Length: 581
Image (cartoon, rainbow, N blue to C red; front, side, top):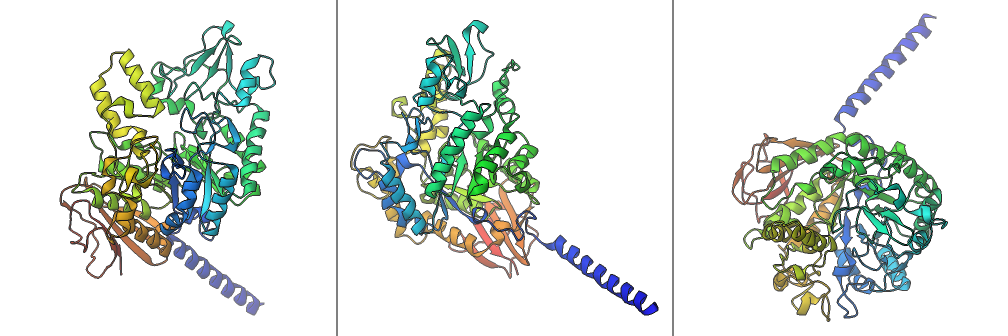
């Protein structure tokens, strides 16, 4: 009995020691608990966003198209990206450049045919590139058959596909519209003496997700494209799909923080769980929501794996920091750090600073002057490719393309900008200030045609481009940068390779250094004994940094200058990635 007892105690001690060792090792691991042993392609991917209208025109009509993208697939592959997010290509009257869809199962004629799409998808997959499509189901076009039927009669079986307010009830409680010329989200329709809801333009009526028939229609549309072999969806404006259909009055001035009232309304999570059950659970695809709600809790509820809803979301906190007068680097660091901290152990996020809804990356967050455009563009790319999360990178930013800054309102094509111009005129707004603001922030700045080479219209089209080409295309273009080993383009390729070769940049622990430095963003990424130090100067002047780390024996993995200066003073917009010994 004594021997049995001794043996039992011995094994108990061994087991205890093993558990302690495992727990100790657990405190050292730098891998997000949600991803340890659960690697996913969409976590490790670099997502390249293509705005099809402006990427490449194949037929000379001045509008980019699918065949144009097909002709550039080898170029896209050469970037080292893993997935393409394609802005909407569905049939649309084009009120909001394709975000007003009239037929979810067809291709807009401007872009080509379904045969072209099939060729594009095969070409991407043949090159190991995945395709993620935009799913725009907060609203449709007012030219969709659903809406035509819905507005035809109050007794139409499609009436409840949208939100209607019968006029005999009086005027509906005010709702703010982001794109409407009067910012009124209710539009009166005399055909049935009722108002319909549109959070965006008048030609984008909001769909009624309370209606299970509508939801099933959406799920069938998703399956249609997933069965074709696409690899996921980016869910446009999805945080707004659920509404309190009693439409209570909101406090005066609510539009200044409208997401608080519009975003993540119950029962949105019921809809997403249903969507996951009916669609996402049946396919190995990625899903990302535009917007992350009003809190970390909202975001976690969207993306935590055990919730069975979506894979990831992207928040607007950081991208909204850039203003014409500048932005706080301290605030930028604080924003990214708090989001990383909130998702360090569970969940997954997107990393981005630019897309089709923003002006150009280097013009907003860097310095697009001749002296600093290249180096600041490289610095920003370094940041995006070395943070934890899935990076989303907008086409043209790899060249360091800049804002076009139109002087004439007639050169702009962006519908909400043109509507706001008329609104400001009507209320006696400061038009000079408005014009200066949109030179910095208008979406058209990020939508000018892609600058391929030095030929007419930057090689984008042989016709008249739908939006003017930036005149700096003669120096900023892919063909010129291809030949320059130190160009923004080739630097971006080095970054994507570095990220692939170092999973620590995907999953590794993030630690902010020199927290109160108002000019420099410095941090480490650490995993399984490997530790990288990233230092980024966000200023056009020499800036001091104190990381507390001796880099004398460190190896420089990449720098946007020919050789790093030191780890004490950084040159304008200098970026360095060190591997620490």
